[in-house]
Length: 504
Image (cartoon, rainbow, N blue to C red; front, side, top):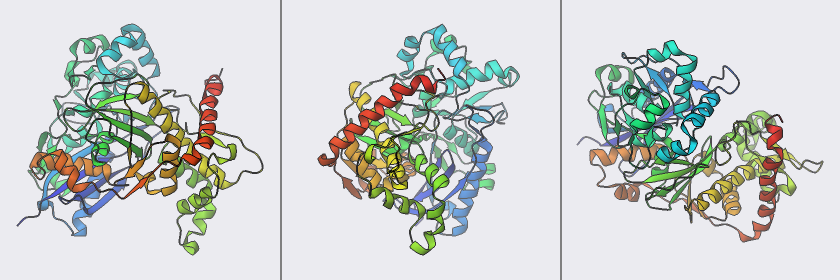
């Protein structure tokens, strides 16, 4: 009997990850491939989608060469991708320009002008999100103003996962969860809004048909099979936003259930069964039909520790072999010796501006409270606590919007750190369950494929079979006073330094 496996492809910011899952959610084999982010000018951050595709093909061929699974074992393919791409393709499917990614701020002027002309409240009423340069809309307006010749050759604008769907199947699609990148997307009903298209002057022809995340978008073509090693005719679902798939992979299906994101970026995703938007947060459809997710998306996440280790972990790297501990584990050991509240050292994790809830591209990272008593361990712990304070800030804003959280389910690489996860529980006062640390996003993409091809009768069955709790962190009330005091400093620092950050 032919094995029935699910293939998931995750298009992240720094690399793609491919993973093959069995029906119980266990990883049969996986492989990844890195690609660069280009920063050609201040405030710009862009990637070449063709490098994504090459990375995916390389990763898939690594899996086939490993011999643990065959392309004929794959029942269906699910895909998730990073947010807010704006990939311009012509009628032949050629990528016309590198896509600005979610960190890109080049469209600030275009967003300000469109917001003033159309009205920020009118825009928000349709799409449930503020008009900011991170989103897809502003990037397309930038193409029109700054690159009119290119703009005239655009046939369609794709998102990250829909680009990969196109490379695999030849079909042009847009999934509902990535619709939130567009401000002419009706967030209540999951469809394009023609009136807002006209207000922005965006050509309706640019916008692909909208599919549910688990709808079959097409099947693998002969050309894609030759490059990727996949079997021609393998079905591919439309896929979805990485945050939505990660939320599903964490087991979040019901109203109020929440995923805490510990990848390169940080934040949370709260599942809602009713529409509750707030301009300080991010609203999108869930990968699960009929649900929304209210997101907090921060720049500071696991990337903060990667930065710190890269710049200040040379000694720990040099002795990793003799200690048997990675540099990150050694740094965490140092942080664990520091008291909660970090003896007054507070970190603002605004390392590339900040997204929710302050939406300030000019925000800067700050260490405050230095004196001769501070050690490297203080800096490491301050990084962890600063990210936890940004999470608390987002949760407080979500509560004001009517979305209260009782328990969070942590995913991403940061969830592997017992110390960091406990800090987040203590700072927010919320219990944190860790179901999967590293595989939740790809697992969520695999669930989309599994439900569609019949390996699971429902999402409830998929979660019951695949999501397993590994540990639970309860908030320690003894740490509340120290963290409340430090959090008040954290909130006050940005208020005090905002004008200075803006050059005033």
